[in-house]
Length: 372
Image 1 (tube, rainbow, N blue to C red):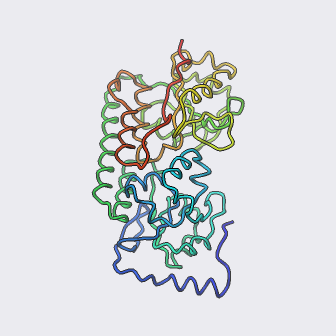
Image 2 (cartoon, one colour; image 1 turned 135 degrees about the vertical axis):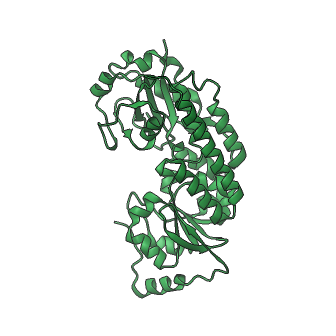
Image 3 (cartoon, one colour; image 1 turned 90 degrees about the horizontal axis):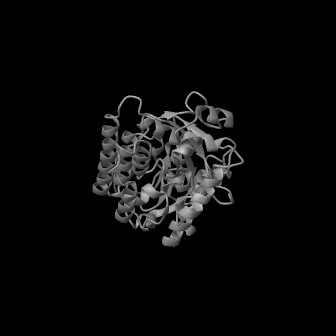
């Protein structure tokens, strides 16, 4: 259950005080859910629920000067190393009000209203989960703009980016980002269209947050499962799970995937996880990946024999730069067709051009020891 603002007359009075904001000029946006939303033309106080890096990329280096509240656990808790990196570069992040986390049921309507935002920017999954709490936010005078990079489509990536550009007065920068994204995905798709019959390998992906002794989630039709489908490879999780869940070790061995993807991140308190992300040395990533090869039967997998044990940064998927991971996986799966593609250069350029921190760390890698 969500925490809500329930202090009788005080709550009502506060809601009324926000219900009629004194904006000099308004603009009307149509968000990713097709909702028509009236927002201030130049909002100075923003509640940001998710898509923290994408917000920075679109709005520019001073973006967080206008943010007053965030859902902190979706950043500091879910992507700990990423949070630490940006908090060091932008100390103001640590001072922002925390409105709680929607998925965990700790979102506080009271905290959201107390932050006095001109507008709230939420992910579609947050807005849907909040339900009538989102309605109460808007009734209290906080318009909500819904973005959706989680949809993992070019259309929604472009739409979400354009919305951020309109909201933040950065339309030109946003359109450049949107065009670059669409062009990069189109280039990958054009090459995939030329693949010979029977070129698609079997792929197994596992969230590598618990270490080799504990089987963790695979994905079907969402997250990395969606990317595998996009690359026209054969996801062995398809037909076995819905969205995410565990595949039995026996099933994985029987399927004998030619590619194994281990999704790593910078989780807190996960001392056996495959560590990836900002500031991470690949030596540590490879050490944690190597442990998975000790699972019973894995030495017989084609993926191990052919040197196709891949590490990929879980926090980078469903972002404005996730086309770099699409390039990387395309090259790993179809090396001949994508031999001239340099995904790391793509990441380096994106961070150098759009982000307030230089690229540093391990976001994509192939385990050197996995080959013969």
